[in-house]
Image (spheres, one colour):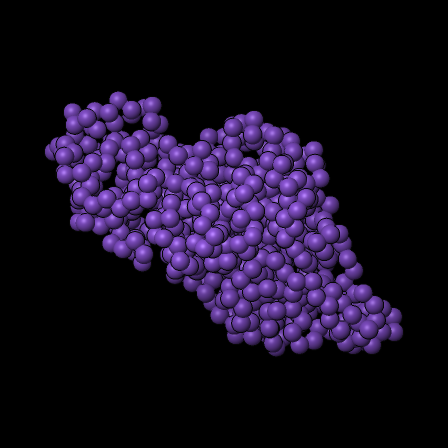
Length: 600
């Protein structure tokens, strides 16, 4: 692996002092801009930024920086100079891209720092997968820090993953150069109960002086929440309302509020700042999950900042929540997050603080994008075959694998049904009365079948359940090897034969997403790396993803970003109902429940 090395402050301190004192010309000068200072929330016109060895030497007025014959001069022309944007919590795999292609997609949008949790690949490939993601991240021309995944499986005893992450794995990874902390601690019941394994992972992270990420997906803000906070997580991104944000900030956590492809949790929480008037220093903007279509068509952190402003947030406060607050949270305030001396020269030029057009992006003192066009290479890792051969069914499946048998003699049954909630990660625990035909439960109207197909150990196992909310019609099925977090294969359909076709197709191509209708494949997104990612460019993946979204619509689905809802139906740490390879899980009580309650 060839790392993209970057000098430390200690390496270049003497040069920074010489440039700042005017005794040496700078490597690069950004001249004549409005300095957006996120420390003081000021916009100060008529300033220059002097850059030396990729770091900011000084920000001073009146064009007084020394310019030599070799100095690169970038004319700001009166535009705002803002810090490069930081994503405080995200999963590269959700973009269906490798770290290299994700970087290539987001750099033109002004993202210069990302804090990634590769727990998706950890569930498929274990510590080896995390190391591969870490290594490719270290090769990129922007700042990517990796959080060591904490929970694989996310809920021990409720699911089976390809690999498990141990406390020893966490302790080992803390010595890797790009590890910034522990990824989201999803096993919140375990932490609240004092589970020794979870506490050992947190202790190893804190002993290394690094940040513990949180994930508290429960509406209970009483004793359970208090116990979770006492267990050590320093932030949380699972809030959905103002009370969630307030509770987290009051307890000394950072409230990370997210706008992803399907999660719209900024508007309902930012009122803690805009209306309640709480200190914004403890609120951080993030994306969590963005698929390639969102990145190509809508943006990344620039999209989140614009949305926060549209929700009534002062532009300077919104920028602070996407730069300095993030840096401070991870102990990197002296490295990134502001345009001040000693920091990495991550700078955006924009002509409008509210609309936020990203016109010129500089990362580590180097121009990386201009007017939406990438100007640098994003190196690829040579992914081994072990990362490309991960879909193992053990046998071809048939429609009988997706049959749901009814109790003997029943004409209809009452069933537990997973209810999808648009634009939110939580689901609803619903019940439905369904007919029985020839001894089999037949989904009716709004209710579809859902199945989780084991794909790590070639067991041939299939778990069947029911789901509502997608609105599918006709004879169709959608299958995906992206099934957070266990990443078995998840299949939703109205017809068992189509479900079998879709399942076998993904085994054939080595992973991805496919949609079948009446025996015809309508869309296919190949994801050969761990069944999660493509190493093709974002625009190419986005085009296939757009066809996949259109195919869902053609099959009757009207939900916004329904694919993200599909991929999360196996995430057994977010209420209320989920499916795992072991059964139907009531996440409110963290226990299995029967699919069929009784004849109705």
